[in-house]
Length: 245
Image (cartoon, rainbow, N blue to C red; front, side, top):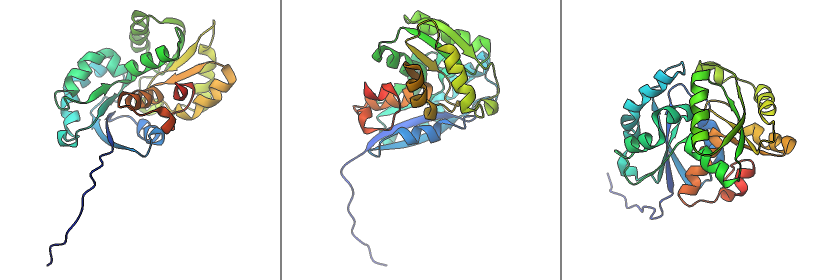
């Protein structure tokens, strides 16, 4: 046996961590397609119930730090995303950050709901149509949070589904119809919520048709994580008007 010499690469890529719900079938494919090759993505999963209710969403808070720890702290990730819009709404974005930073104290912590609000502000959108897949109790909490942060909700359209396996199979045509229904009363933008809803491929078509911005959970989270670590979305495949901010 001969000990063979080797070199190591001194240039570290930007490292992103993503905490994915165990019931989510969508975000990983959509997320990777949006990221530039200059980023490394490390994914972990957090146990989540197959039914989305306020109680099951709150249960995830206890598992956040342990799930974050499955991405080793030695990786020195630059940003960590908790990929649940409704979960971050119920738990509270600050509480999510506190739990994740127990493991990754130097990482930016992003959630879809904070990313969406930042994106809407960046786009100058104040009057918002909403589309969600959730039962009314969950949708209403999200609506209230947006109003508390200065947004006006012009319409709220929901599929009123609690089962994640169904949400992941809602068709693009159904999503488009819902967005059209929410784009009323002079809405500046439509926010389409849920990381398990397949939305990235419909954004450009809907923006061209409706003439307003479309902001979705996965799109906004990717945009927020990239911009938080100094990467321009011009270098990425983030779709829609958001990519031009």
